[in-house]
Amino acid sequence: MPENTVTAPLAPMEPEDVADAFAYIRAMQADDIDTACAVIDGMGPEVLRMLLDVAARIVIPITAVDDHDGEPCAHSFLAAALGRLLLELLCDGECLAGAPGIAQTIVRFTENILTEEHGDVADVLRQLEAAGMKQAMEAHPVRRTTA
Image (cartoon, rainbow, N blue to C red; front, top):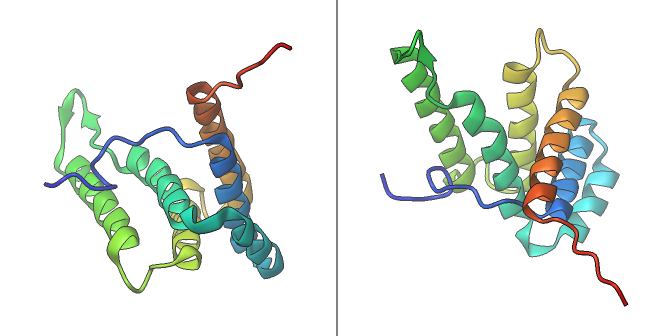
């Protein structure tokens, strides 16, 4: 399989990108179109890359090949294939293209896969953002300067 956004290793996101992407996703989840528009206006031309980065960081760990008693099973490979397919659709699919489609897919994935009985999606998104921010801060520590 050729390397693409789905199979290539994920470069660490910048902390600001994590914050902006999740602000947009949470606004879309809350149907707060005014806030979503304000956030996306400030994100610049890299908005799709940022949202796809977030989607990959959510989907890949959940659908990655897992083992059952030390051996991968058929269901593990199916989940991994479905995760890759979802990300490929987000990257290349015309019906899901664009920031709103990517954000809504992340929200639906979170609601249907990561919450129990469609629990508190906003809370799970906050937890995902915190994990993403921690990873970004570890990869891009604040450099202190002394004058």
